[in-house]
Length: 147
Image (cartoon, rainbow, N blue to C red; front, side, top):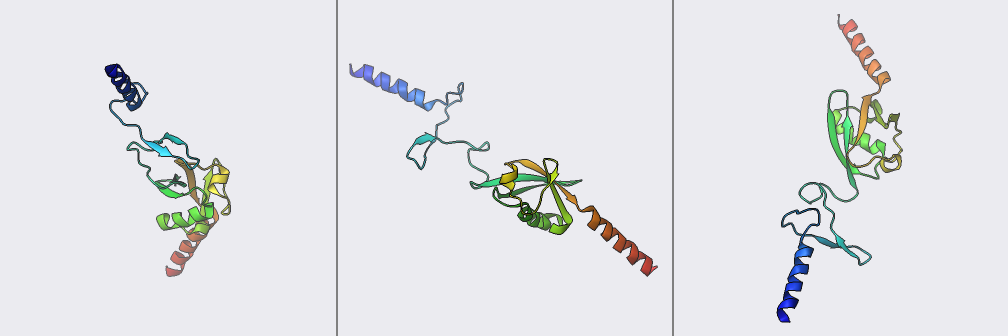
């Protein structure tokens, strides 16, 4: 009788240790306690199982004409705050930047999460054509004066 119980215990322990996903090897299931008191299987993020950044943060890929930047920011940030971060990276003032998401130019006061920006989404950064033209006109005037 005693042997039968121990076999049953070992059999159930081996079932708990498997991943259930078709022979994942000897990987161990990690558990977490949710605020409501429920114990659930811990979610894995990335390949190593550790999150790349804290909860509530998202990575946005911002593309310019010739390059791209991965920016990590809070999901509840505004496009104006994103422009401030981008000004440090691209050397364009926030007023010179135009951010497009899903084909529409976004206002500085719009929140990222409210318009649907999620982790690893792409935002297009363009330089304001009017300001770009003013810069070129200023350069042309500077060359004409010095000649």
